[in-house]
Length: 106
Image (spheres, rainbow, N blue to C red):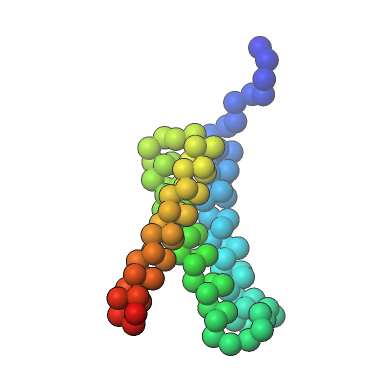
């Protein structure tokens, strides 16, 4: 027998949960640091664009991880597919916002 032993069920669950929730927790930490004034990026209300898109991405990633986990995907496939789906979701949302702004104000 070669290779590493199969991970236990508990370790697999912990790895999947950590991988799914970590981006959201980091985004919340970043938002809290920004809101408390520890992080400043030249001031103004434009800093909100540093919080909202990553928040939407991390929520889409979390939902996608849950769906892939429920379907029984491997951890690697779950993570890679979720990154792609969350990125596509945010890209489509930005395109819709740009089109709406262009139609309304253009």
